[in-house]
Amino acid sequence: MTNPVAPQTPRSGSFVATATDSYLAATSLPGALIQAAQNLRAAVSQLGFAPPVTHIYNPLDYAWTAHETYLRRYANGSKRVIFLGMNPGPFGMVQTGIPFGQIAAVRDWLRIEAAIDYPPNQHPKRLVTGFACQRSEISGQRLWGLFAERFGSADKFFEEHIVINYCPLAFVESSGRNRTPDKLPASERSALFAACDQHLRDVVRILQPQWLVAVGDFAFKRAEQILAGGQIRLGRILHPSPASPAANRDWARLATIQLRELGIWE
Image (cartoon, rainbow, N blue to C red; front, top):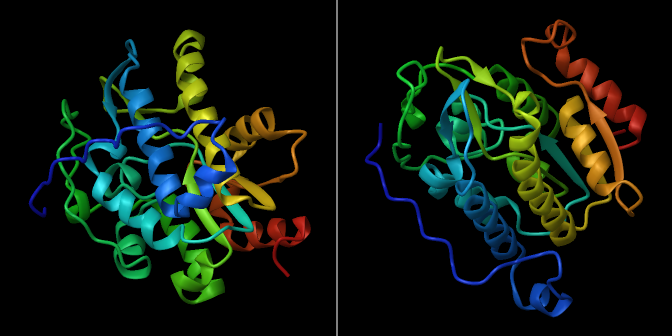
């Protein structure tokens, strides 16, 4: 693993829903998204979660360098399509700080490799080893693999698209089992979703996309609740998780068909 670096301290100030057009005019798109991510990081760091969740991973803290690099490099213009995931996977964003961040895809296709710090209170079965991680995040391998096959270069994909996650936190139970945000108690979901909802609104306002495509049902339900009735068009594709039998039957072909039916891809 590379030498750890301390996460950066959020800048003063806050980018909130009432930010004016003049603020955006004076701030680069990557800078505005970085500020929004820092605001989200600060908001979720104040939250507590009860058993069966025993360990919380926030890549916006310990993997901030990689995440900031992602935003600075690839969020440098408005986007036609936002792909929205759920939350970090144990061998993807938890390790690299990049949504669906399978190691090989991030390092070799996105061309990002950064020092990853150690999160506090790691579960012994879910250690963060950063870019030295030997496990592959299959969801990320499939998602980024589809984009690489269709667009060739990451620069070409990011001309009109970007991938973000709804929730920045990963939740691990005492057994080492991953717990998804939708399985949290209602009282815990309420505060968490409020912070994540605000971040998604910020991202949509900053990037001004035509489409938000949810990767899976959870992301679609959250986007529908937050953004329905607005100018953005909503769609969804099958989640590429190997836990889904349908996704294991040529996910790339199925997702491509769905995107063509939406009219997003030809």
